[in-house]
Image (cartoon, rainbow over all chains, first blue to last red; front, top):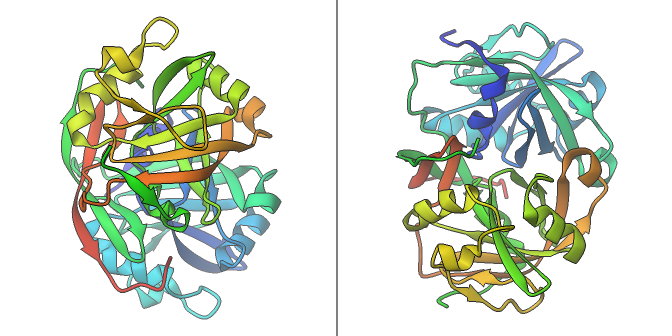
Length: 178
Length: 178
């Protein structure tokens, strides 16, 4: 795996752009992956992430039971896998095998990292009070891994129905905003 | 204004990509604007948006008091204004005047639309139960406006510290995902 440990205080910059992510869980020795776009940063440090995971997903049950997951950020080269993973269920498919992705052991959670993604965030569930009403989980990132050699990650941003825009050109402006 | 009414059922596709947005409020006859990136879709229809607005922002007080705002989506041509708006406070600055933006009357809320943005979503506060703990508001979109002539909006996606990636190339894959 090309990724190295990444400061928790800088995690927000990875997700604030709104990329589609691949969420991994592991329950009873069985790993699973889901595609997710409905997430937001909620705190800088420790980094908190709010996300909606539908109760129809197998990952919902695994996350609720184990309270652990990994948020992996894919780039353009994985676009077909991202859509494929979103179009089938872990109840009937081993998604790591079907989509040729490589699991790697996390250090602080039981769910696996996806080695093929440029960034992976090990997370623990921090707050479940909006799960029943909105399927909304609040996660704390406890360990982050990033391939920092990749200076311009072409992340995917879902517009719906399998259409994505790709993060490309970068604009830098002087700012006091964090 | 070039925008026309847009179906509420399609709103999620505007925000799911994670663009930086300009949130307008109006309190006691005084309009204000803030820059925001920490938001997520929470429901398709009626469209629900969850967002973090820091208690340090003047907009926090206005949103809590009036329970109404407009989420406006700017494009690359407004990058300087987006950063400038994030770097000053509505307590001391009339941001519409300072940044040369044009307010337009909304139809269902008191806050103004920003005519210069390609999309504007009139919102009412739907749930405040996580405001005290996380500054997290849940908004319902009650009216949407989009300049549908703009087929490829070059939205801005904040990586932190005034650095943005721009939504550019589009990838279309066959998907059953909504």
